[in-house]
Image 1: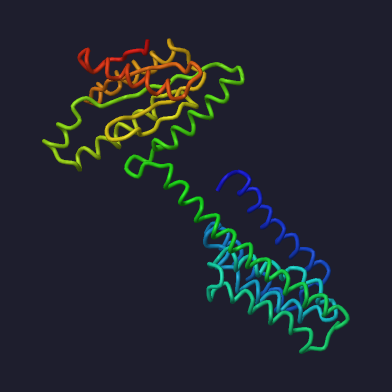
Image 2 (image 1 turned 90 degrees about the vertical axis):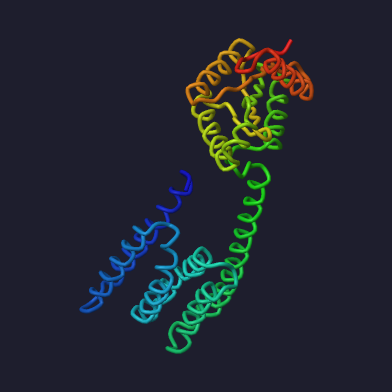
Length: 311
């Protein structure tokens, strides 16, 4: 959960605690009611400790029972407790998939609360507004849950489309998109970026002699090493096969060469050698790829395990 998510998660808990405090001050519990309030508070604290994934399921039914009890306890002032009924639908929407049995239980509790004043014949002047509002809130909550589900699916497929499944690095398409964004930034007058292509030397030999499983393990290890030794803000991706690409924003040729040399030395400590090609963006995205690739193959021709710059 990111910072904003944590803020709103804690704010929701603080709001529920404040609502409970206001209700207790307005209608002080008597006798056994004190025990029920203490039990509800302990249950809520326990649910909170379980984290945001488990808390909605743990709170849905206790909250429904509490609101039903509260509407009965306060008599003609039942609309005050009814203000918190939307929390039921939201909890159900977060706890269960849309239109599942679990989510429908939130609607069931809402129906019980709507019928409650009619059964007891209390404060019916407010009841039509309350009943209509619950139907609207329930519908909106189901729509929200559906949109949340679709957003999760879209995010999943987007990440799958832009991530290399073996190493977890951005794939070639993601790198191309990032480079296009960097090119647009440079074209607005900012510092140029550099592109580094890396090809592991004799990698086919690893697959042939030790098996593809060992080759996959090595690729994962190399990916983690590259991430650990680039600058903050640099982007490491898998270009394809045993080839990686490193996008270095705001990096002139000299700095890019130093980064590549550092990575080459770190690979050597790992027992792996790699050939590097370095190119600085000069106004043409396609050309920077070609120049970096040419520099990489120059490093291969000159004996491998070296860094070459594009002319």
